[in-house]
Amino acid sequence: MKRTPILLADGRELIYFDERDDADRSMPDRRSLPEPPPASELRYDAVMDEWVAVAAHRQDRTFLPPSDECPLCPSTPARSSEIPAYDYDVVVFENRFPSFSHRIGPDGGPGALDAGLVPTVPGRGRCELVCFTADHDSAFARLSPARVRTVVEAWADRTTELSALPGIAQVFCFENRGEEIGVTLHHPHGQIYGYPYVTPQTATMLDSARRYAHRTGGGNLFADLLAAERAGGERVVAANEYWTAFVPAAARWPFEVHLYPHRQVADIPALDSTERDAFAALYLDVLGRFDGLFDAPMPYIAAWDQAPVHADRHLAYLHLRLFSVRRAAGKLKYLAGSESAMGAFVNDIRPEQAAQMLRESNQQ
Image (cartoon, rainbow, N blue to C red; front, side):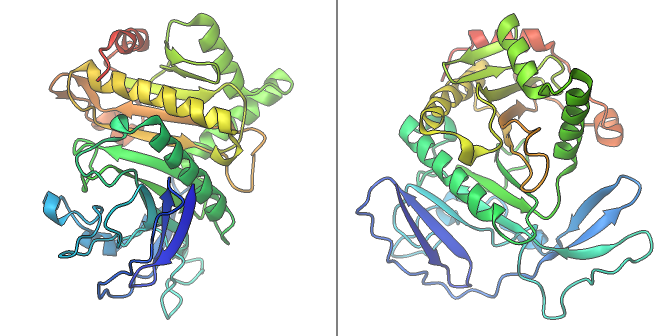
């Protein structure tokens, strides 16, 4: 794989990940762009013990453009996009409308001062987009195993690089697919966030793992859950020598699958070459089952749970959560009062039934 970093016209970084060593990436960004926006604000919610980013500049981000104006397609002689090249394999670049950024305003942004019950600090961090293919009409499920492997290499590269940046506490790689999820660009892509704090979801999981280790004399919660699912088999959707995909027993979403490597590792860079190859094959299998379930593209979120950069790495267990809001053909699971207001999920489908449906799905 060939890795080529360049700078876009406004100073943002873009990196080509090429499957050919002879790829020419000398094409410059021909656009005239304003400077990127300064970092957002982080405001502390003392009631929920959580940080909330306020990024007002994101109101102006690109929203469902026509395909001939897609900013993630390659450039052409007649039109320049976010990617200067006329073709590419996988590309990662800094988000033009980031939730977090290292670019602090000339006044320093909101001061790191305790404003009573609402401390406010600059939203330092980094947000990147990952374009999986130059083909606007494709999807992750239609990538070749070799291309998925390139994407995994890009995830590993960016996790390592972002983890080394000052102030980054957690790196999150994810994909949103489908307008039902809230996607505003249809081109196949994902995102990577470098958070300046450990996210609430991760903190909760690691607290649970810490209590479990104490209660069991050193057991790993994630490893034991994986072992139990593999032994029982009722909720296993697919597996190979190195990975298992299963519906969790207490799934929150109508269709939710977790993919675990059989070896405990903290993050994507820790996967060896064989594990990366095996992930590509199994993930494409599961995505095909998702799309085949109702003979239509399945809206989903794919979320990598990686260890925080500096804390509790021994407790963590890398895994991917894949879930959809679709509960039946033409029907969505809406997060209404119980879920949105109370965080109390009610699932419409028994996890065992969901696993059976996915096992029997005609892969697309």
